[in-house]
Length: 261
Image 1 (spheres, rainbow, N blue to C red):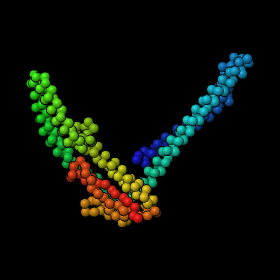
Image 2: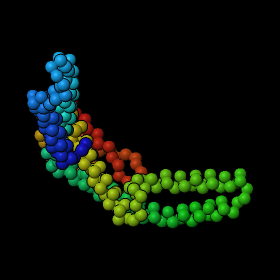
Image 3: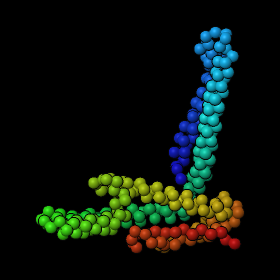
Image 4: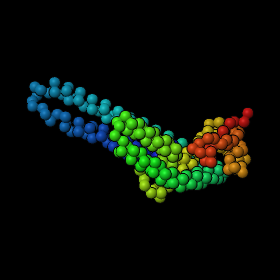
């Protein structure tokens, strides 16, 4: 979901668009009343036919501008609804157990990726040595068929290397320094933490409505979140289950939330 700040800007922009669309209608009415649509009249004998044509053009343009206002209101209503949902979730971002759980998750993820970066740098040096050997073999080989086999093997090795380190390279964005890579990685981990918080809140509210008490949640020794959340429509059981990911040392989880019957 988009951030509350982003949606607030969208709502403001949509409100301005509605006002502009309404002003276009008022300008059209004023111009018509002033007779701007009749300026091309050449004489009384042309009035009836020409007036009918002008009226038709005016009606068509007015309909178009009215539709523009309606569409502007629809877009505004949509953004206001999204903003309301985002604001409701924002007010619930104060449950300490969930915040602590996700802060720990984020710290573990950042630490994991930083360690993987070090391994990746070493692996890249080793791969470049292998890659340079392939280039040498390609240049020195004068048998076309054999050369194509060497190139295919080289491409396969390249794909294998990229696949093996895809979890690190996903934050690369063409960067060549650790600082730029790390900044992107940390930014995306923070964004993912926000998405996970929103998921926990959304899923819980779907089951039990507005949350009234989360004091029965707790953080386990492994950093997992477990316990109960009470709402106006019942109680939900929260359980964290580890899940596979980029690496078995990289902690991923699934949050299972079910209504207590």
